[in-house]
Length: 231
Image 1 (tube, rainbow, N blue to C red):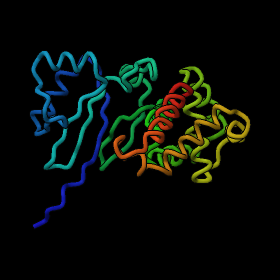
Image 2 (tube, one colour):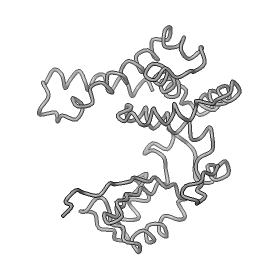
Image 3 (tube, rainbow, N blue to C red):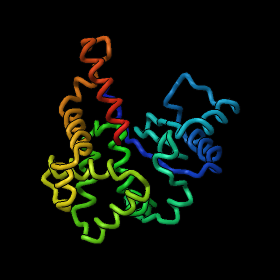
Image 4 (tube, rainbow, N blue to C red):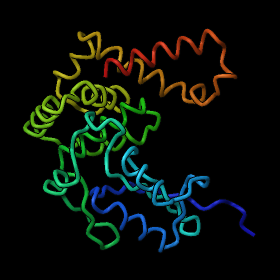
């Protein structure tokens, strides 16, 4: 008998706040269970989740699919201040298995990939691979528009960080102005170097605080705090 666990495919789905109840019930009716087994979806608990959290996670182990229903991108709404309607207006479509699926518009998608990766300190290389693949055919105008959108939203440091990382790790071609930032801007230098350090020390990151030397743990805490202040 095959005892290997099924492959879990994680899907992030953005919904409007008005559709929270309907989307939640749809997943439950179609065989999805809460990822957090100890949570009971009473009416009171659902109201709390919808008000305080950014998403709710479901899993269908038989299908090997995990779904996160998002009504906000991040816990801090000001970090990425786009709501469902703004995203729906700018949406683009891709074809998956002969089915058309809406995704974020060009600049929204790139900004989210960079912000999401930066917030999680690029703990998964595939996040950078996504950015590298998406920007491979960027025109000069596309780069300019991306930077303008990042500055307007106030997330330019996270975007610069992501673009410099794909240049350094994958030799991806990016505008020279971004490369120069990694050489002259101390803040960008720190953000890039700390991300590289995180990527190269992922196994150490996974150790519990009890397994880490006390001095090492303090240094990590200080660097993490500095990192999140700067991004």
